[in-house]
Length: 153
Image: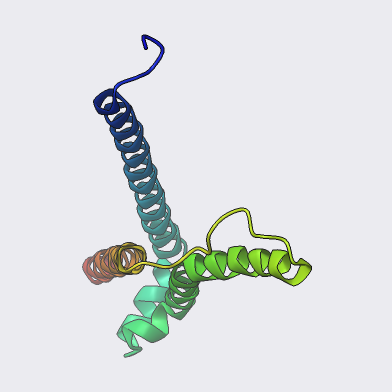
């Protein structure tokens, strides 16, 4: 009887493990978001400083903001699409692997993976935060370049 663990203790151990795993996932998400934001803002800084004269000349010539920064905006759009499609693609790929077991008549080692509303919400939020951060950074640096160019003229 001393070798048996009480049910309450087993539940506490499982809860501790789940909470630890959840904290690790939240930490990983935070780090991924920080890396995305830092990279996005860094790209905006480099693009704006490298092309400062062209940005100012195009602004004075009446070009629209989207036309001046179409390269960065198109790359950001591509990144947003990739981020939005990544989780559904991974789920589809894992479920496709499970179908191979069914085709061979072998029971799959695990249940099929499903996308939850939380998964889609986190992915959508991540995409939106990244896109907004890059757009805000691009607007701020664009205005700085225009102001600096106007004071030098």
